[in-house]
Image (cartoon, rainbow, N blue to C red; front, side):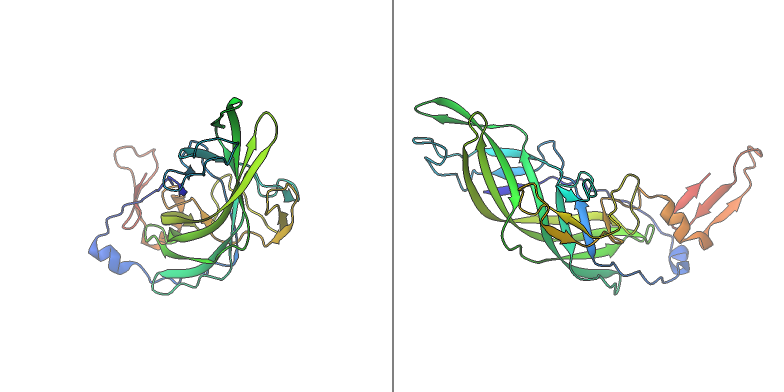
Length: 282
């Protein structure tokens, strides 16, 4: 079985003149503190499991059922928490076990999956010889001892307060199948999975509508609907945001390099401002 994802990558390009590059001060980057990341899985079918290379064996669903080699699209289910709703719509929670201290523009920290709950977008159709077509829901959940992974993060010079993260996230996931009409269950099937993260964007500050947890909280880690694991709050690492989506960061970071002049073509309008790092702003 393979898991497939299609993350959205945001890239920001910037052209620096040599003189401007030399003028940029060397700034120490704040440490990325320990904490949790609250993630939401896209529900468009971009995430799922594919059984083509490792089929579910014959007879798994019912006597005489054929091996299953299809793929199943998955969508997130908000995790149960205490206080209720404190994690928003997060269906995946990753904990950063160590702080990330920057050296030479990069930092590395250890991460581990703490909770995950996904369900199939569409039911799986399985033919049972004695009954005909049957339909099954697929649920994916974190289970067992989770391996520790490492992420390496870099700073985007476009703003200095955002960057990208790269690494391989290892997961231990259990898949359970539930027959829709009878509630019969099959499984779970336990799988060791890896998720490759390439240039995942992040910022120190949360963006608009980001869910931030300020205190320790409880979460359901085994998909039984009952919060059983206590986790630390969020910190200063917020995936999914970039210099492009937090454009003001660049101007604040390099305010000393900004040069403004009057709008001569329209004296009543705002001044023209140019920053060698951030570009031009009216």
